Length: 263
Picture 1 (tube, rainbow, N blue to C red):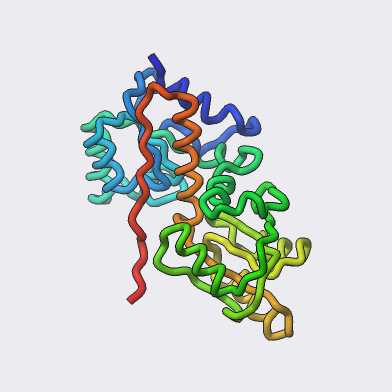
Picture 2 (cartoon, rainbow, N blue to C red):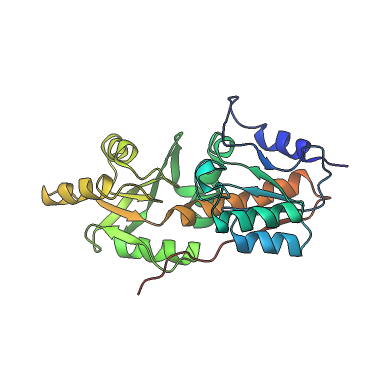
């Protein structure tokens, strides 16, 4: 018998010790025997229904299931969408573990490792930092790199600031909501980067910094690939880790459909 508590202990084992208010058993009991695991970036309604259909009783989700970094907000207590989702979880006896902070505290960051593996850039990686990675890739234009990223991640579009024909070699990579100026600007400065690829961040910070840098004659570019697109590969990588640690338990990774459409 493998309990949910055993799964949780294994998940947090590689992380630096700290107390996380997000990474908790959101629903369920730690004593329950695990019959099947579903791993997802986001516990959407569709992911929930698929987990129920394949009889997985533990869902490991990176982001909160109720549309907030907090796992539950009392302000949503009367919202019909939240209540319907919560009712389905309870009716199906689904156990949910939020796995966010601990995975980012792996050394190197588990989400970043998954992203670099998905992009097949392991051999180009120069340094892992706590919130970013720096790479030296074969020189290509911004357009060529953007198209490569779209192909490897299976995403319909990216957003670009800068000259699409500019050639790049030194790249900074940041996943999730780490595309803000506080992280991106020092990375550009300290690592002498041509290009930063990030998930997302405030549009008035890093994108405007790059715009002004270009106006001043500097050769800089920024590619924003989206929060989910940058972190889903990390959760896919987690599936491989779980399968290696618990080969007797069925483990499924469910990738969400693209959220945004270009019209």
